[in-house]
Length: 202
Image (cartoon, rainbow, N blue to C red; front, side, top):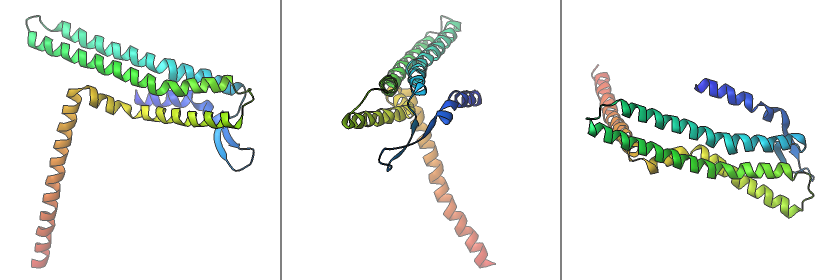
């Protein structure tokens, strides 16, 4: 699935390689990699709205609900007398649902602004704009792009803040590998000392 996802998005984004180019500013000092104005800019606005603004939250919702449904089906297969297991299953379902909702909300909040901006930029590309307006639009675009980059790393923090189980497992991993590293740091000098003493003795 990872390979299929990789090739799918490589094909879907191939137009960026074709239509993006180095644009030189009017004074010849600044160079930016961006799309040239025209029909492609309008296409990019609708593409961004469709892919980032609609499809991503929709797919996250669909697969999250399918995960929740799968958990409920497993719960229904358990015998009714096993109340403790059922209670644990319900708790897991609530945790999954809460993580799903927060993940979707965070994804929409962080990715929607740049989508709206690209849509706006495509529709207003033929308007005559002042230098101040161009400066403000570039500034807003950079801020919104930063939010989109943050969105790519937000899942870890969402899971850490919303799931006690995730935090517990993360803590166990940290403790486990810390003890391994500590043991390695103790054993390594001892092994070096032993090897050195054998060398000196020989």
